Length: 190
Image (cartoon, rainbow, N blue to C red):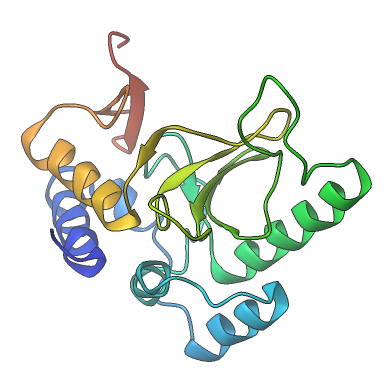
């Protein structure tokens, strides 16, 4: 399996060659002190793959459609989104699983990686076979790992594969907007 850094390098290479209008959306690397401060704010040690990703890119410099479904967050945004979810979950019984759901609305061991509106793509740090998987914590529903990627590295590698070779990442395929920027669309739509 390729590393997170290798996947980002492949994504960057494709952007330089095929979508130069998009490459400027990527922020530079996160400062190690900011990563440590965010970990302290969240009370959780970030998984190695997330730290590796943040050392490549501290989220986006401006909004874009860089990844399918959600845009990568910067380290400060990760801590902010985490803290908001923890506060809201405490107020609305969001840590409990409510039938028919199999996941709570939020869990203290979910670390945000990316966001689309109020929905978060999260890395699951709970012990067990699902540790490290990538799933979703929607703003208005329970968490969902039914289409989880086994890891952040696997997800970013799938993105790089779809860009370089064509194909999809889940239900999404890459395309271009009229201004030449990368745009992810649902498969079957143009």
